Image (tube, rainbow, N blue to C red; front, side):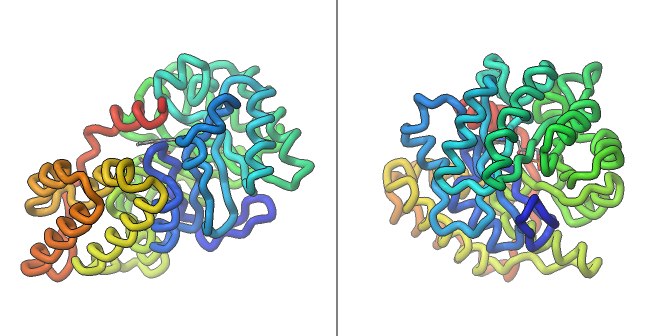
Length: 350
Ligand SMILES: Cc1cc2nc3c(=O)[nH]c(=O)nc-3n(C[C@H](O)[C@H](O)[C@H](O)COP(=O)(O)O)c2cc1C
């Protein structure tokens, strides 16, 4: 798998998720089998570049390359400037966001709303490519299948974007209108893959090794991108990789390994956000990790009352140790993506 000059170790990618795929989470997923990770979206609005949020989002210290930064905005010149700014700060790949459905982003004609204005979308792509190409930085793009079921223009846009110099295209198999509801469809992704020569990445609802195999086979995509299913389950990447390579299931992680992986993630997380902010933003990661496990909900509620990193870490350790007394390996968890809409709206709008 290749993006411009960059070779990737495999074709399993972590999806960019604002508020989730910060540097600690990306590194965690990479350690556990993801071949590539795009950063959370960074705004093209210059006045926000100095903010704490943007500087944390742009933190790539110690991260293995290629460093891919996603930018979002509505103005071609500003997007080009944002690309140049991020290249100066180490970005090796620039990804354009045309997939986020959040209202705050869409009202400003950013994210997936851009798919409705094809001329502007193309203008943005051309402006960003014009800045990146001389630096040898590939430009990639992530979009949905269209605005709505009646306006499914991903194929037309994909052709335009390829001609404009996009090096890789990711498609989330939903329209903007769907938000995160309904099911992802893969026919549009398959049609785009057939029409293009650049790598195409399939995204949407891939939550198991079997689903990964089926989506790869159905779409013919060059790579897969996994988002929500990696929340609290970052080992999904090695599980999928193993299944694709051997046709056999890798055993679930031991309870002890899950505990240690999460503990390490939290240390890294506190390091980026500090105690006050870190203990709060870590709650969602812990909540996802225990979601659907026996006693997980009660633990999540208790953990939300803890305001110090050391107490949070200890509670987590105790909870997993207790689970380890009845289970060697992590028991299967029920999937629960019911808050995705809210979560994504909040995260992307921020
Ligand atoms: C909390 C959250 C934040 C997201 N933030 C972004 C983002 O910043 N940029 C982007 O292109 N997509 C974003 N997405 C969309 C995901 O990258 C992905 O396309 C979507 O979740 C579908 O994949 P999945 O079914 O594997 O989760 C976000 C999704 C969620 C749930």
